[in-house]
Amino acid sequence: MKGLPIWIVFAGIIGGLLGFGALVDYIAKKRCIELDPEEGIKNASDAEQIYVENYLYQTKENNNHFQLKKLGDESPSFFNAVKR
Image (cartoon, rainbow, N blue to C red; front, side, top):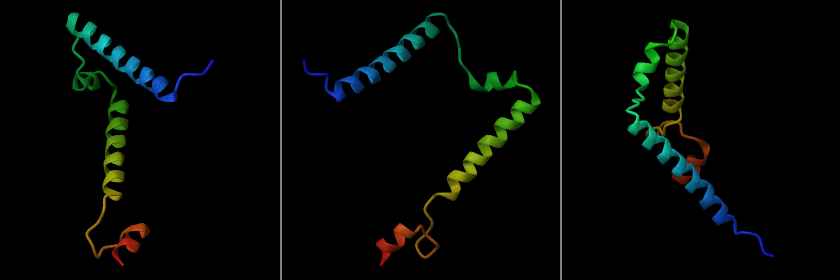
């Protein structure tokens, strides 16, 4: 007996996750549960708020660091080969 093709397995996993998410969303809407991240952070301690703000700042700085620079500025080495 031949096994299932891998794409069918992946499609089933993705479909299951999407279905589970839709079910959770439906139940939350039916019970009038509002999931507001801004409201959740108000219940956190000062240390947790500082930690989250530092983490978000560092993530933003890391993303800015890896953005492509203008031509003529230092660029990653694999872009130097393309410019030549």
